[in-house]
Length: 400
Ligand SMILES: Cc1cc2nc3c(=O)[nH]c(=O)nc-3n(C[C@H](O)[C@H](O)[C@H](O)COP(=O)(O)O)c2cc1C
Image (cartoon, rainbow, N blue to C red; front, side, top):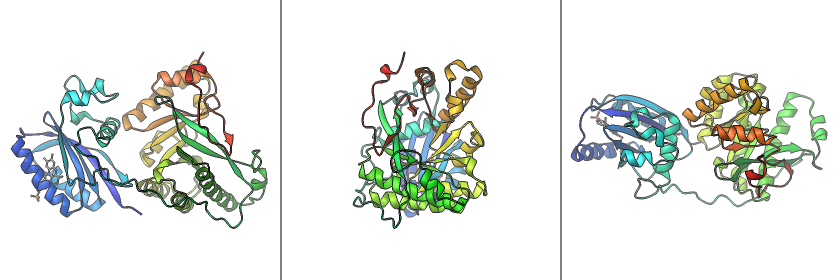
């Protein structure tokens, strides 16, 4: 299990930094970082800094304590501190870029923010993730990270002694801004495509059910690999206890590796309402596996116990809005107000919003107008038995 994390902060300089000052600061920083296996990058613009520090938690926190006590800058704000599966700046003990406000304003979607004299000290985590994304894609970097996307192990289906009588339908998750299918959710069904009654009837206890769910996820990954899945894969997790979740996520990770599907293509959709054990222990397991690369989605958001407090607890990559919030949204004022609040919060935190169970064009249109780009539901594409969706009609055909 990887024990890497990154910490991203912004600060404002208390003095003018000449090129010589910056060179001296970087020379010392690089030497010290290299000795502690800390990598990262530092952006400087108009007297403000944004720095990414990545490495083992103890080393990163230690260096950050020293940096925080440095009187040459102030207003130090930690924007993100979270586990990561791998380094994004593995080739730099401390990359450095002097960036202009114009270059930042050029960033997709951030134009309104960076014009008018705003600087790095006013970044929130959503903007920061956008900025880092651009940086990782090569902007302001003379060379890209050498982080290898090494070819995975040879594809093979997981061996199971006795398979439960189930199979899967795959429903597409659509990104409207790119007009692409970004993931498929594996939905359990019977071996003939009907309801999985035979398998469910064999479950007499909660433990039986948990075992079936675990086997189902393993089989879903195997089937997706056989179908040469080109997208992400979404799997639901309905664990009741932290140790069940740990076992389930371990098996997902191992099976994905065996099948040649990278961990970061797998999204685990958590249904918080199933949890009856200690939520803190559960969240800590989730974070651990997020650190290993799995993506986390809080499912049924806005219903039951899945609300904004989950966002803080799990720091998910995405949330999927509950169908009761999506249904008839175009004509329901209170639902619109709630959905707008959630969308705004997620935008500030850099969390993707998925509008689930979208059935009619008016629902799609409303969420699209509010800036949501991820959709799932019958309007976009129904679940298909043992089949992936390769092509979608253009949204123009759904809209009135
Ligand atoms: C914006 C900024 C970024 C810095 N980044 C680092 C860094 O990545 N690594 C580091 O060792 N020191 C960094 N420093 C310098 C530290 O604050 C500190 O001066 C240096 O580590 C020497 O500390 P020491 O004398 O306690 O060993 C940075 C300082 C500033 C103002």
